Length: 163
Image 1 (cartoon, rainbow, N blue to C red):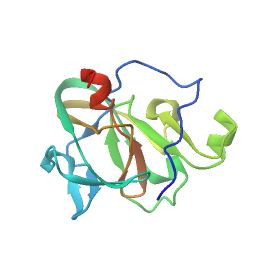
Image 2 (image 1 turned 90 degrees about the horizontal axis):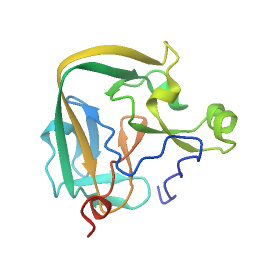
Image 3 (image 1 turned 90 degrees about the vertical axis):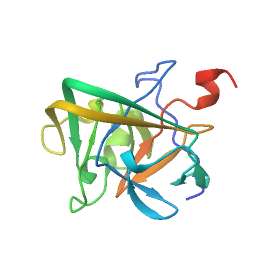
C-alpha cells in the first residue's frame, strides 16, 4: 500500500477543480472498517493506498435533482466481478489495473474518469433522481478504497483554498 497514486494520463480529462463524487450508500474503507460515505466527517481516518491512514480534510456534498450516474463493477477496473458495485458520477476517477490501462495509457496502472470506461456491462449509465453526491478532499490527491475499487479523491484542499 505504499505505492504512489498513479498519475492521470495526459489524454485523460484535466481540470483545475475536480470533485468527482460517490453516491450516498457507497462504503469507504476507514481505520474503523467500512463506513458509508454519508456517515463520514472531516477528521475521520481513511485508509489510503499511498500514505496509509490519513485524515479527510473536507467532505463536500451536493444534491443531484435529476442526472446520470454510473454503476461500476469491480471487474471494470481489473478485479474479480464478485464484489460490490459502486455508484459514482461520470467524472469520478478510478484506478484501472488491467489490460485496459496498458491499451489506453501505455502503463500498467492508470487513474481515469469513470465515463471513459462505460461499456454497458461493467460500467453502466443510469438515470438518477434526488441523490446526494459526496466528494472527499485530503491534503493531497489520495487513492481510497470502496471494496475492491480504488478511487481518486477530489481536488486537495490546498489547491481549492490556496493554503
